Image 1 (cartoon, rainbow, N blue to C red):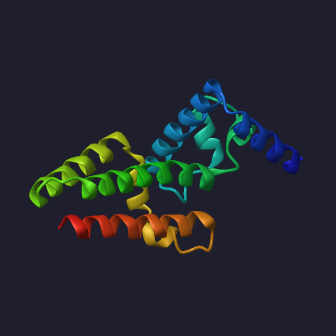
Image 2 (image 1 turned 60 degrees about the vertical axis):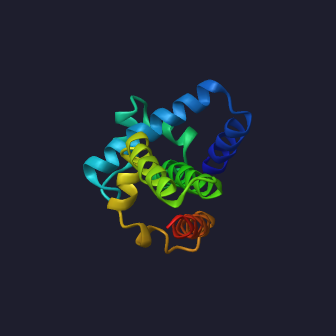
Image 3 (image 1 turned 30 degrees about the horizontal axis):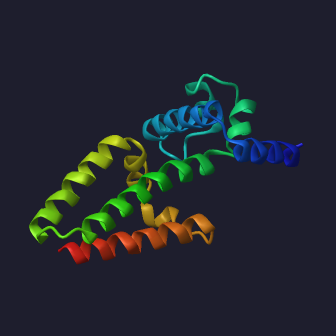
Length: 154
């Protein structure tokens, strides 16, 4: 049964669609709220499903579990920040303008991606990226890219 659900989830994700993506964003929003309120470790699928106004079985149609939800929400926000920093580096503006744009951009990002990035910082970024998953490797690469961009700006 789990394999069947996994296949249905994969097929639905491949097919995409506006309604499917809208539901995934609602789940991310609900999960972020629960993670902020209870902490990542204490949160569970029932909490997230209830906050998203769906049953737990429906939640698992969209996501395999809270880890996938967390990684999806944080990955998008972190990638946005890296791309922003790299765009600023590539500009021909004077260094002080670049630094100002970076700081303003980060404040805007944290506002736009709140509470996702808050949850990531709260849950100790290094602890969550220590596993050997593809996601962790991607996050480490993004972290290096961001650091490189900031160093170039400074």
